Amino acid sequence: MRLAHVDERLSLSGFTLWFTGLSGAGKTTIAELVGPELERRGGPVEYLDGDVVRTHLSKGLSFSKEDRDTNVERIGWVASKFTRHGAWTLVSAISPYAATRQKAREMVEAEGPFIEVHVNASADACADRDVKGLYKKALAGEIPEFTGVSDPYEAPENPELVLSTEDESAEASAQRVIAELEARSLI
Image 1 (cartoon, one colour):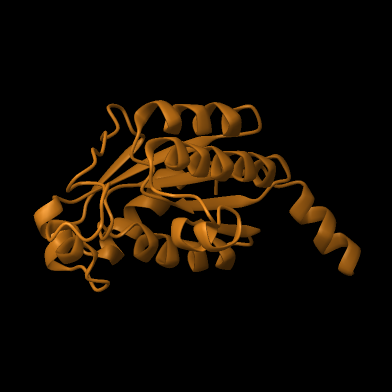
Image 2 (image 1 turned 180 degrees about the horizontal axis):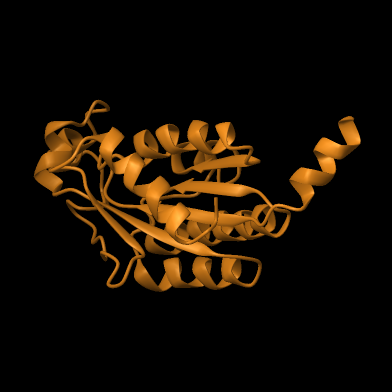
């Protein structure tokens, strides 16, 4: 009986949902709502959260453009391996530069579908909901190279999905992600 369950999971097609947006836009919150629904549907779900990755996989990297690119490329590489092995991978990472997101997309798409989800909220809205106090520190000059304040965020030009988290709840955004996956016959 156990082997049948393993075989069923191995036959699943992997994909990556790549949530990108400013710090505080709602990327992790939405991923944490989508993930349990995917698990409920039998998916082998893996999470790659930017904060967690920086603690384990990218420890020691700075926030320079070069190190941010390295971080996003590492996340893309891991996501591609998860996707290759049938995992439904949820990436929540600011990933501020378009060219580096494109590199991550190419790595993943060599193994399966890549769905870019722009979690769109203004820097002002993100600063208003910032529980970590990062925007306040960045605006005071205490955090150099902070995306959306002193460093650019290159919004996706053609993401598969845009979630306007200033206009809809995290729950409504999560429902839209699930609907997108259904429309693409991924779940």
